[in-house]
Amino acid sequence: MTFRRSVLSRRGFMALGGATAALGAIPGLAQAAGPSLAALAKAKGLRFGSAVSAGPPGSNTGTLDDPGYSRVLVDECGVLVPENELKWYVLRPDAKTFAFERADRIAAFAKAHDMALRGHTLLWHHPKWFPAWLQHYDFGKGPAAAKTAEGLLVDHIAKVVAHYPQIDSWDVVNETIDPKDGSIRHTVFSDAMGQEHTLDTAFHAARAAAPKARLVYNDYMGWEAGNEAHRAGVLKLLEGFRKRGTPVDALGVQSHLGTEDPAAPGSLGKPQEKAWRAFIDEATGMGYDLLLTEFDVNDRDMPADVAARDAAGAALAKAYLDLMLDYRQTKEVLAWGMVDKYSWLQGFTPRKDGLPKRATLYDDAYKPTPLREAVAAAFQAAPARA
Ligand code: 9MR
Image 1 (cartoon, rainbow, N blue to C red):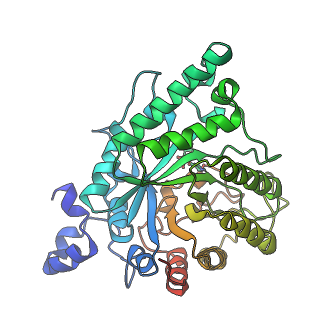
Image 2 (cartoon, protein in one colour):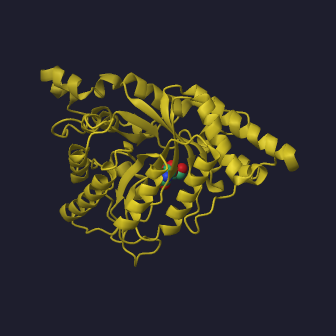
Image 3 (cartoon, protein in one colour):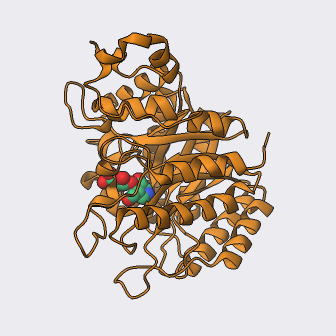
């Protein structure tokens, strides 16, 4: 059986009828009952999808290469987003080269399965995530430095956006606000061009290259206590964009939920619903749409017992999604991965008991979890939007 046939759509799967035995070797036969998440979302004017990863052609290192995973994608998603493949550290081995091969594989998969594609991200404006050659790039001095820096940034954005005309929604700038004090981060670009001009330039370049795409500022300020300075910094940034006429259409709310034990190192506190609504009201009041771009649940501080843990994660997710989907401005929901074992959260803030996390919508046997049902129920309960 070819790879393509192993990821048949739900309809194709049903149409096969007696051929299910042939699919027996593929994990994930326990499909979710009822309509797909993409269909439930679409019925309310929303898009649902997931992040996916891809190694170089011929390798087997991305989630795309796992037939069980890609079958879940085909079954559930209307849109995909490359998890890392459009980041500078993957795309740009040096100042001259563009390495599109890995992202191309995801783009081709989305096209073959009639799924939309989001782009993440044209400028992760944080020096830590720049490739080494760019971290200390010498743009020279004075006005000439600003011009050279602008040239490199605009060229990158123009070429990457033009390479993927199918991408209709872009995280143009990612995580430029320092959560500690709400300030804009410094990078080689902002040292040469100024902070606001760097960010504005990125959005103008994206708009020029993709006049119809949704252009997004994406960040992880969340509803938990401890995010106050981060939220304030993001609002200030959004206000500045509006004042300067920067073409930004939406705020990407990453929506990594969980880690609420204030006693645990590096963790945040309980959700602050009132302050969170005020934050979202301000953003939408400025005319921004909302996207939930990287949804998952960090169950580090939840019970070890699987049923109790799943119930806690699902309840948290349902409460959050109900709140967010009540805003008609919320247009897309993207899960940051669909199968627990591949989640970035497995390596981030591990549980004290060492148990693997149950952070995504499908478990390691490719079976839908209560978190998947919470997302489905939230879509069903959501008001329709245009
Ligand atoms: O899930 C991503 C992980 O595989 C990468 O190693 C990491 C660094 O590039 O980025 C992770 O995704 C991040 C996303 O790009 C931006 N928001 C936070 C996400 C989780 O760290």
